[in-house]
Image (tube, rainbow, N blue to C red):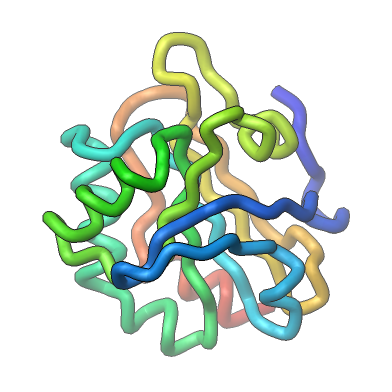
Length: 153
């Protein structure tokens, strides 16, 4: 497993995405000055990813309470993200890394699933302050746990 180390600048990227029905490109560096949660997940419409992203939706106030932006990233295309976001009422951006360039830059690629369920927390200066890369399974970091870490950043 490779990828950025905690304390190093988070690799910048630009990916197409969907947020509340609006399609646009999202660039990590556009969020400078804000805390950012990068939540990598294997796939839309899958049970584990649905549990994770719906949990983040249901506890979105945890992220807002610490002034953090949440970006979901997976290899599906924007059309698939849009259908899933609409079906599940996901109001945060879902970004399409169809070529897995960002997945590779963050070292979260995996055989079979393509992406390890992972979370990276980036501070307002663009520095990686926390990372959790899942080995396997459908477990994920809860919003409240991430918010506690974000509070210290």
